[in-house]
Length: 376
View 1 (cartoon, helix red, strand yellow):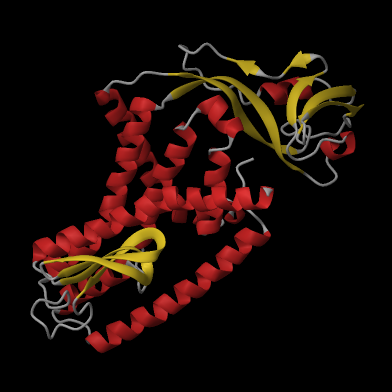
View 2: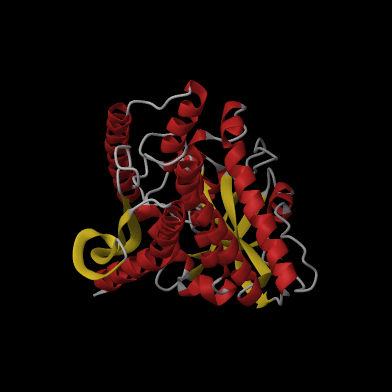
């Protein structure tokens, strides 16, 4: 029964999280294609196979399909310019606008989601605690008995749970634990943790920190700063718009800086792991878990939805065959050459690119199943 409930929850989160984001992407393509005079043969809700034809309005069929996520737009002649009303026959500016409209709608969608989140669901964290994300092999933490997932409550009698005034806006003191542990290098130490389980239990662990322990990481663990309590914060519309704009701008800046950070080795390659729809769904399920919503409400889930929308936009703009960015690249090549690439060659390139992306998606899905992504 628990497995069925878990699968059902994942399916619902999958539809709620990814469905609308994929839908607005295709809606952007659809709206601009119509404005450009391109013949849109079908606008489908969900992914084929087709379940039922809803109606026909003008020259466009509106259909309902069996896989209840997202949508798709089928335009005449996406690579064949022979029909004057085909996509391929339109001026370059309209083809560029039609292709770019999908990602731009996702950027806009992320902004709208964040604006609504700040207006109606914004919270101010008032209590934090450290949770262990990883214990290094052979570290003092491993010898003491600390485990991944342990929440550190106290060190040698000093409370490690941080409480903040709601109005202060102060960030958590990320160095408090390190400062406290550092005092006991070469001495006995007792750590009280809340250990995950059904139910959670408080565990006292004791040991001795070696005298040669690294002062910068005396326990040898990586940590997550976990919010345990929050209070509602009221934003006016201008404040919500500004906060959403700053967050979208920050997310875009991070994505743009990724290649440079990898080259400069300021970002570890393992932290750039791609995730599939399975990984995205897993994180979404964790973010609507009762423990998260009780402490922070829906804000983390909505913020994640906005990040996913921006990531969809950014990914689709990459200059890879079969993606919007790949098709835009061919139009830019056409601008530089003064004539378009042979449509048959372009079609072949996109077909090969689609096959490659499909294979890559399967690999990433398998990776997410074997080694699930988690925020915990």
